Length: 436
Image (tube, rainbow, N blue to C red; front, side, top):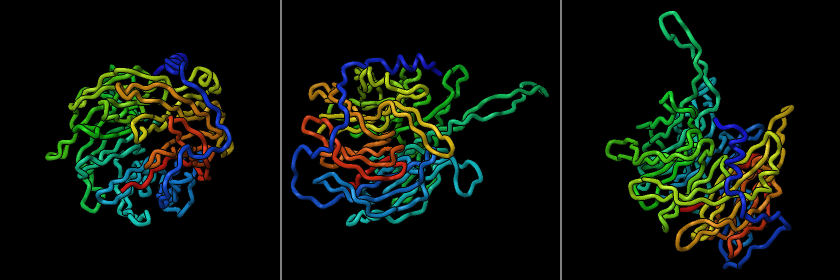
């Protein structure tokens, strides 16, 4: 574990250069477009510290960026993430929970699939599969459509174990719950079969200081036969591939390690430059890694996320966290959502001490793929949790967990952002556009 001073030093690394923009009056989109019908957008809520479970379908107007609620799909799940497989017209929802209904305590979360009506975006529930772990964080369907990989974040609650060191001499040992990357076959109808392999990420070496593993994202390389997963507990990225014949997970390359306490969280591939961008839950930077066809990673650059003044606004007892991250469809811009704040429950109510909440915008060099800070947009909202770009790249949608709303931001020609509209949703945590 790193000290508060160490973490502050990590936060400040490269913090200069990024420009700050305070969220002003509502803006209009930067450029006009021809008329298009509404697009379905799905928004999940997270039952974290007083939030309510829900999963909602909206109609997104591609002309104005406004959202109109169509229907509540379900209130049964704490939605950690969503992924869509266009081949089987199936939406998958990760129920990020420690417990299952048929267990008093424990049992982990679930993967809930839904059949998509391509004409309306309406969803029909399919049989649910256990995630085989606590708090399934993210899912990804492999390029063949035959398998799904799921990152199991695990619980942060330690376990107390009684061990017998020598006969009749006992001691107390502290252990942590399992974390893993799980492999599930997908049936032809899109339903999820029982897992066929589990890659355990919990440290086995007693000499390793970081005993907690928290795999977060899983994402397949678009132009190579491997996927990566960021483990924010161990500060590593795993490079993995699927042996389809044996139904097994195989390490494609040695794990790539960051400095202790950085906590890598999301990764986005830029195949045009053979790069992958990684953001962090503690480090104030985006790391730029080069990858090859074998899954080997090499650090080649970085860019600061927020300027020094914003770090100084973090309230006492609070911390800095980058949340979701998206690459623009035109390949010219990268967006990373972040917050610097403190949240807690008191008297059964949620409390939030605002330092800053916002979105950082980066330009991508067309020759090298390296990042340059363009804008840090401060939001008048609490805990932006996720983000998604509209299919044409004209709008960025940002759900905000603690201010119970979803923001629509217009994307200008130069990649910078301005707010267009907002809609209320309790504990909004993630958003996904329908793409078939």
